[in-house]
Length: 166
Image 1 (cartoon, rainbow, N blue to C red):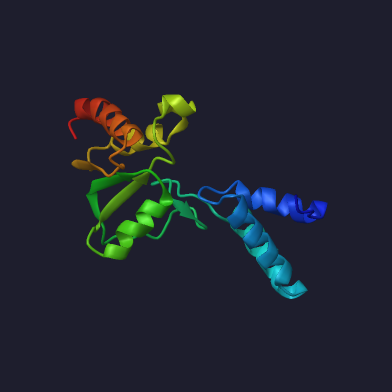
Image 2: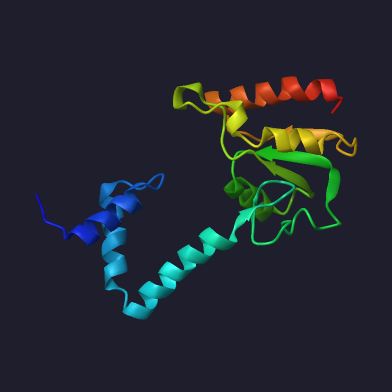
C-alpha cells in the first residue's frame, strides 16, 4: 500500500466524498491541488470559502443564488403561471442552456427515497405549496428523473397539488 502524508490523505478523503468521485479520481484531484503554486491554492480555497458563505437558496425557487432572489425569479419577463419542478440546481442550469423554457422553476433539493431515509419533509415541498396559494400558478410541470425515486416524488407531488386546482 502506498503511503500518503496525513494532510494529503485527508484531502483525498474529502474529494472522495463528492458524488461520482471515487478514490482514484479523488487522489488525482488531490495531487493536482498539490501541483498548484501557493497563490493558486489559496485562490482555490478562497473560491470554496466564498461559495460556501455567499451562496444560499433563493427565497422563492430554492435554487442557488448569491442574492435574496435569483436572477430567474427576479426576471419580470418570465411566465409566472408555470413552474417546472426539478431535483437540483444543476437541473435548472441544464434547462436554461436549452433557452426553450421561459417559465419559473422550483428546486426540491432531492427526491423521496425511503431506502436512503429521504422523506418528503426533507425536500423543499412546503416552499412549493406556498407558491401555489395565491392562484397565479396555473401549471406545474414535473421534471424529475424517470427513476423509482423520481416517479415516486412526482406522484406524491401530483397528489398534493391536484386538490389546489393547479
